Image: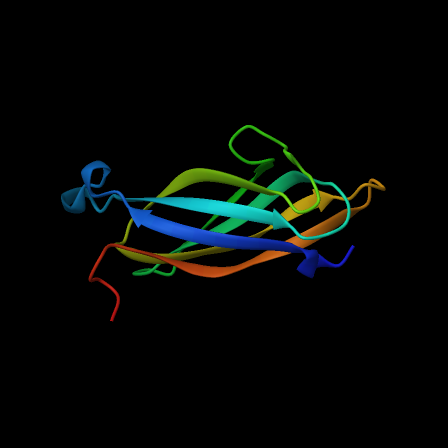
Length: 125
């Protein structure tokens, strides 16, 4: 399968009420939409994220099965949306990674998720 047939879009949000600036705890949510533009059903099998703290450039890696406790099947022309979150030690950072998906033949393929910014409002120049 051609990876371009699966499109990933991201929307982020800073969660001020759950963050503690005095403790260098900054909480963000991100909403991911995975659109299947291929002619066959795909299944999201696993994820790999790299979260980078903007101040120290310290990385945190996250590996796991599926997303939010699910390994969803996404039909042709359909999409799957979920919201999750992360905690960082800085008010600005980035995330990137990939999903492993399985096509209708049972073959695994990767979909890269380009870096996206996590930032509190008015904190990015």
